[in-house]
Image (cartoon, rainbow, N blue to C red; front, side, top):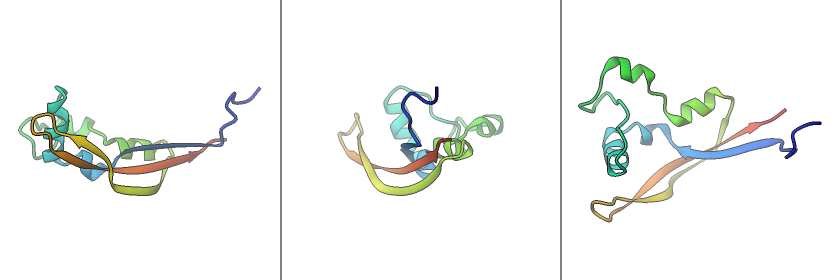
Length: 99
């Protein structure tokens, strides 16, 4: 018996790497939700060993065999809880053909 869903393609979206790894964006999005800020070179919490461990989501999926097929510079709107400002979040759509 094969895959119960009989899916041939997996499709997902995630923040684009340059957006996710931008220290100004990370500061706003992660800390506003009470999450630790990823170790970024321009951030005060930066350490070289932590940076080596940090893999952007887009890069991780691409290492798993996903390929980019569309990018939307304002795919989602994130609302800053401190200011109420709506910030466009750049997203990338990825797909992977399944065997």
